[in-house]
Image (cartoon, rainbow, N blue to C red; front, side, top):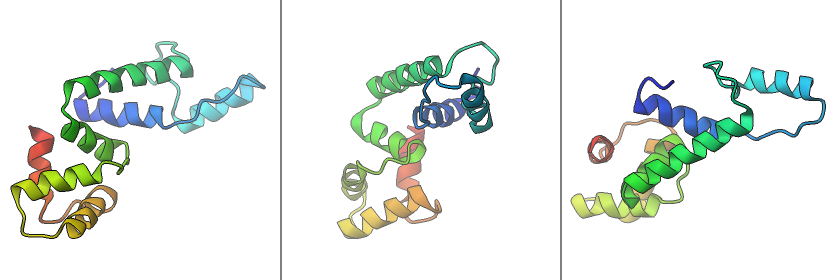
Length: 130
């Protein structure tokens, strides 16, 4: 179903962040869901609730396998959740302390929300690939 870990994480976070609609006027809702790309693309017949459940199970398994810093990185990169940016800042500053903590926060936010070009990119990429 998934071609790579990157593909799986993109799909799982996409499905997780998509609202589940109610059952009223199901034909119209099904059409709306199809236009949003939420329906199982592999034609396995899974419902939207099944897809959300599968996504939750995959994310729970990933969270159990990774340490806190790695999970924070995955949340920031794929889930656009920057709530753990302070943990990432501490991780970066522990390895290279030539910038101030607030500058590092700003650079990390820029890294995950806009363009992946900054001088902390190499540290984050090493964490990503480890």
